[in-house]
Length: 84
Figure 1: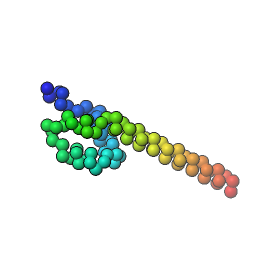
Figure 2: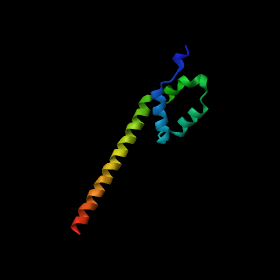
Figure 3: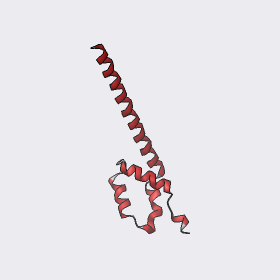
Figure 4: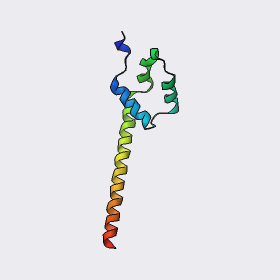
């Protein structure tokens, strides 16, 4: 019975990552803060794994885009420096 009420470690790690990325609404944060241990099984229903996965993916895409932009600017600056 107790096993049925546990939340997977992967889910919790992913949720922690999204919280650190500020990817949750204030409503979701309040829900977590007010959550009682006896009601912990409602957490994945309130904040679904699919949503968490989308937030993590979006964050990684933004990071990748930022890296590409930085490299592009460095190449542009390097080319301008050689032309001067």
